[in-house]
Image 1 (cartoon, each protein chain N blue to C red):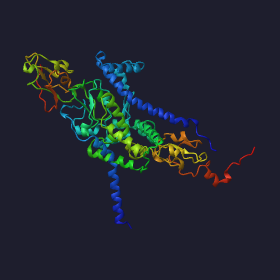
Image 2 (tube, each protein chain N blue to C red; image 1 turned 90 degrees about the horizontal axis):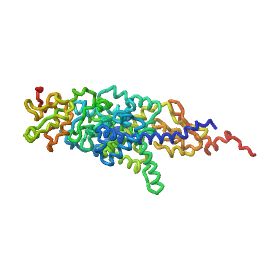
Image 3 (tube, helix red, strand yellow; image 1 turned 180 degrees about the vertical axis):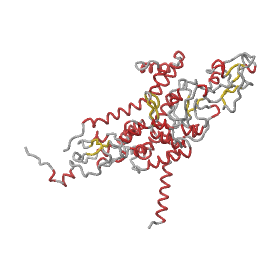
Image 4 (spheres, each protein chain N blue to C red; image 1 turned 90 degrees about the vertical axis):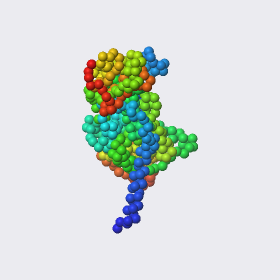
Length: 334
Length: 203
């Protein structure tokens, strides 16, 4: 037996769910806060309808400990994961920067700089955005769980495997189409951007836009065609982060000495990767679901630029033990 | 030895893959068919790029401008916008801009860039003198003059006259006068600066 990975890493998956849920609930809360701000700016409390008064009171209760002047102070956190501002720090999605570059055929440095921090983090951590932040991921994972429920009820859900490289073609096609049409097309097919803006439309502007239809179709695609299919095979953002995370520093790797070939990791992996045979590759988003599910603590974080490559059968597995009888510790008979 | 047949097969295969990869974009196109909006009454937010095509390629549709707007006047094109989908507009007949410049500060791209309040150019107000109440002697109004955030520089009353409104050079087209106008047919509207006529004199 090799040394066990740090016990905390088994619990990172819970933390991940917490961050996903937090990001998503922020996306829901912010539009409500904005509506509240508009009421405050209008000094119109007495003119509000009963439901509007209720919204006003609720938001006032939530924010009063934190802000003096809601109309101004609540501007500290605005926007969504596509582009937003956080206490003066402006952050944008790298895909937004790339898409805008393609559509306008020019470089606007102040905007490109807002994508710098996400790009650097992606270079270090890989597709971490997909597993830890993306609001669409949150809904897609819930959708995956729903699919499990449906399967338990005896309904068939799609589990097709397509070619993972297809999403790179989608990204390329999107950028080319953006250049041709002169509008930022990737914004319309990139689920986190769609989710962020549709929630805002629904809450603050009184109804979903066309993106809601598109997102519903992707949910159905995941249910009926391929589990987590959009993220795996179609998402242009996921393609971009995979490319950026190709030589990421932080990688989940298998400790072959602790592995017993149970393949639970392969079953749990949302992105259809192959941790059992050391197949992580550039698409792993460090979501740690496989670490959480591993019964023998055989998966751990390592800092390296490349995957180890296939290390053979797990040393605790029957197959390995048959092939290497000499290695086995002799069972002491008490 | 490369076979002509395999080359052709590969080309067709690549073309098929490329065609298939545009599927998501095609789906979006289906959900947002063609422009049916009445663009004439829709203004871009203050500080927007003059060229609408340039604006469209600069805007990433993040919605930040709308999310900081105090009167919530910034709306976003949906299905009716066609290519303009998810980009902002202001319909002053519903809710007009108060020139607070928050959207210009919030915009991460060059779609909206901050300009001083007096240099904002969303258009210019145009009064239809065949309908405006004072102009057709149906009473004294002056709502547009009293609401104007720029005051006397942008809109005032006709020379020697106490109640017939006249748009002046400094008007930036914020649309508050349109929002406040009591006339059902809205004889005041915002038009492009090139189409508008403004009084060159100051009172």
